[in-house]
Figure (cartoon, rainbow, N blue to C red):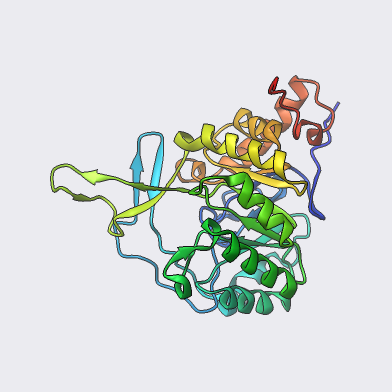
Length: 307
């Protein structure tokens, strides 16, 4: 019997819980000829700012053991160009959820982007990148300070006409505490985790391998930590969780779901295999058939810790 792969993510219906992660799937249009979009749940766009951004200097992406480090610098076309040149391609694809990733360097920046996106068609939800440094507070990352996070989420939620997902930084003492703050401030769902702050040194030159010096580590190397953070957060909040961090196989996706995620995002795997998100979505359905799982939603939170 064909399993029911549908899940509800804070009011956003997904035909499968597997979607593409921000920063690894472009604006979606770049993958139309590679991935069958009708076979995935949706995708999260590159981070969108109010004005266009050129990003960091090269090199800004390197391979590491078990993953990669990136410091792209949130390069993007800006919200107006996104709406007029990128988003229209998906306005007639209601089955493919388009989640717009939003960022800024002050809370007002996020609100300004959301206000423009509110007037556009074809967007299912907003994913707020809380891993950006707040320039008005000495560079403190929104997601690393409870007061800053609470202010950001509450202001964006007030301005938004759509569900607000908050993408949390893992570079904190307690991810569960930050998850609770986001929930109490109005978040409809959480995306976790973002990349881990990291450094790679070229031992021949004694200089950083990334022009930005440090970057974000992603890929299979972070998966056990990401799964643990999803599990801890799921114990602390009642809102849905989008789990991510090193997913390269259907079994990886199952692990995140069992830890408490309602859906998962596939990111770094798309660099090695541009069809990874489709492959994992198809493989997850096959896994459910083999293991007699009638509803994929039943996997969420089914992990038994014995504690």
